[in-house]
Image 1 (cartoon, rainbow, N blue to C red):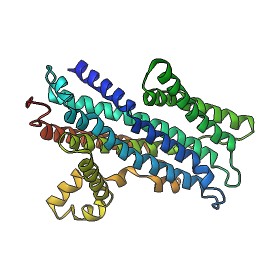
Image 2 (image 1 turned 135 degrees about the horizontal axis):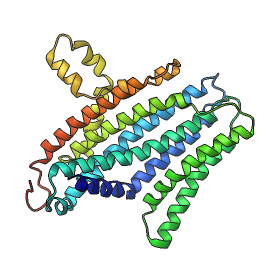
Image 3 (image 1 turned 90 degrees about the vertical axis):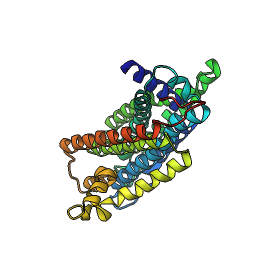
Image 4 (image 1 turned 135 degrees about the vertical axis):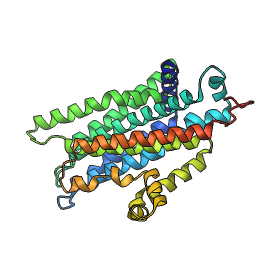
Length: 320
C-alpha cells in the first residue's frame, strides 16, 4: 500500500509541475514579491513591515488559488477524461488513491511555498533602508527567474521535456544560490544586516493554511467541477476569516456553534503578521500546535473525500 501511495504521489506531483498554470502563478508571485522593495521607498520606516505583510498575503492568497487549481488538475480532470479508471481498475484502493493525490498536491504546494518564502526573505532584506534601493539584489532575483526559464526552454527544445517542470525545478536550485549571493554581497559592502529569520515561523504557518485549503480542495474535487470548487473554497475562506466573530463567541452557549467552529478552518490562527509587527517571537510550541491542527483538518478532509468519492463514477463503470 505504501508503494502504491508513493507512486501516485510522485505521478501527481510531476503532472502538477507540468501544468503551465503552476509555473505562471509561481513566476507571477516571485515577480510581485521581487518588486515589493521598489514600492516601499520613503514610507517613514515602515518598509519592512509593508514588505513582510504584502509577501505573507501574496503567498497565502496565491497559494490558496494554486491549491484549488492543482486539485482540479489532479482529480477533476482525470475523472472527466476517464484516466482515473486506469488506476482504479487495478488493485488500487480508493483510500490509497485519495491519499496519494493529496500528498502529491501538498508536495507541489510545498515547492511553491519554499520558493516564494525565499523570495520574501530576499525582498525583506532589500527593503531594510527606506532611502536606498538595492538594484543588485533585485537583479539577482530576476536573474534567477530568467535563468530558470532559459533552462526550461533549452530542455524543451533539445529533448522535448516539459518547460514548466524544468523551469520550476531550476528555480528550486537557483533561489538558494540567489540567497547566498545576496548575503555575500551584503558582507562585501560592509552591511551587518542579515535575513529576517524571525519571519520564518509566520511563513510556516502560512504553509499550514495553504495545505489545509489544498486538502479541502482535493476533497471537493472528487465530486465538483473547478468552478464550483473555487466558489466553495472562497466561501470557506471568508467564513474562516470571520469564524471568531460569528461562531467563536457562541461556543460556550451553543453546541452547534461549537461544532461549526471546530469544523471550519480558522485562518486567523495561522496569520500572525500582527505579531511580527509587534516584534513578538512566535514560539515553537505554537508551530507544533499549528501542525497538529493541520493534521486534524487533513484527517477530516480525507474522510470527506472518501465519503464523496466512494460511489463516484470514474468511467464506464462504478469501481469500488
